[in-house]
Length: 240
Image 1 (cartoon, rainbow, N blue to C red):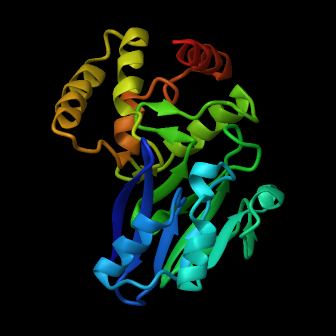
Image 2 (tube, helix red, strand yellow; image 1 turned 180 degrees about the vertical axis):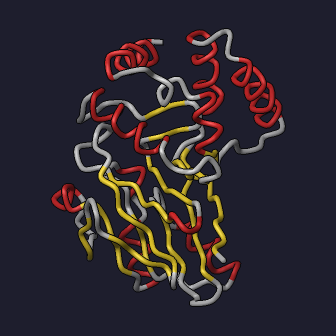
């Protein structure tokens, strides 16, 4: 059984700490900073054995070096971005796998936000760590890729089982949902979800992880009919 802990960082980042009690392995996913991660692990008596990075941006790798020095862990990340992540020990890409104890994560190449962005999908556990590719009711900005790539990413993610838990790296849900309401004002599921999101944020609660099922019903980027429509929606969101 895997336990996943959410660690807030910076202004709106989430770092994920995943622990396998059977093996004692603990993985940090996309550590923006080190101190809260080390504190969270120490408080639970967990030994950090690995770091998994989804892409090279500083708010996803900023804690790598300090955590590695403190814990003696290994760092895994996208081979396509190895020149931009100097702490990597293992380079992975599409079709590779990584493990935490007996649990296997398949590596999926999902470029668009960055050219070498990857996702870690633990299919048997219904878990995916998606970095900045998919957000609750949103998708990542197209910094180094294309709308066609992001559309393909959305289709791959949408093909996962509805109960797959999606661990993204930012708390963007409220703004994403408000924008989505302007695009799909007649989407009853979207209105219902936004009521829940607004109430949760008013209480100071996080709104992720999300699920593939929820995103299929309410995410205007996953619901885009083609790459052109996704591009239009992404450009409008960026300009909003």
